[in-house]
Length: 467
Image 1: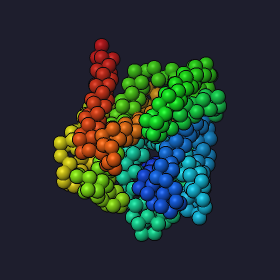
Image 2 (image 1 turned 30 degrees about the vertical axis):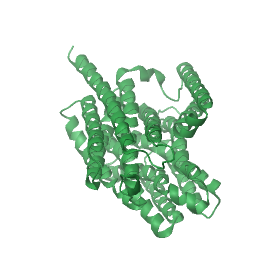
Image 3 (image 1 turned 135 degrees about the vertical axis):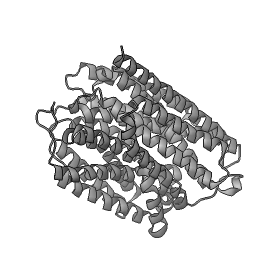
Image 4 (image 1 turned 180 degrees about the horizontal axis):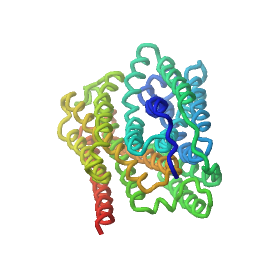
């Protein structure tokens, strides 16, 4: 299908608009992370309950993403984008208004729906920008959707310290309203001839399966206290995923083209994203938690939430730098090799953290290495998938990749929590320092798998181009 480029003047406005929307939805969804303690104090709830202000946003984002991806592949993409941002703005208003805790959770769930817009931004770029330009823009959209957490974290923490939790969530309301206005003025209509059919049955079954998977990843206490229940729910989730796959294979208008997932490039990249996502989020979790651990534990730096948020600045800055450099590198090196190299860089961040974390500068260095690796990995990943994906299926294909990434991130956080919990002695509040080393070694193993998977993709592509 041919491209439908916008005018050059409109393209100049479209590209920053796409970046801004992707950055806003990622930053707003991450607002729960630095505010958990403040929410627990302000609403007089437990830390476990306050944790749901982050979890519910990730859950709603993962559930909404496949549905939005399919809607974005149809003729009503602009309306879908605007309606989704309107939901995000409404949710942002709920987080600011003086309402009970349940309404805050509802607002955070509505904000999380916006995470599904990242794939739609990629679809718009691929449809309305020249091919060489769209590839670079899609790579940057992928990057900013990840480094957005590094932007929102310190700002939200600072506002929480100065004006309380409502002031921090007020930031979300302002930027989401600005994103809605930006999208209304700049988002073009989708090209004609696209299908508008949505596989409702597939959407319901996949949503139920994802809810279970992410719930089990986030509820670590369930595995330690009620193992039989957790295992049973895990079996139910697997059965639901199998049922969903059957539904999609039989549907003439599947939510996600399961057959396309059998393509080695698509399957391999999603596997690399899944395993790599586990490692990337594991290291992010380890560093931020280590930085906030008080000196009384025998290690750590006892940083406040705001100062700990500043540790994320190297992650965001170097992630963005890698995202800008990657399109140039891709002209000389195949995308799978860029994926492999980026996975090695992230593994280097784990090695640095495992070997040297007695000085705050070393944590900044490890976070910078992580950001550079994540930036390169995220920028190269869409190119591998979209090389074998029709333009009309861009949103759908990338939305599935986002779901894979979300599950990987959730499992990375859960694995980190389990390892640190196992390394916490009886009667101790904090894990032994050696538990962080163990977790880092697990992360190195995850990134090694991601590297090998990417190298296998590169070898296959080389054999196809040079028979």
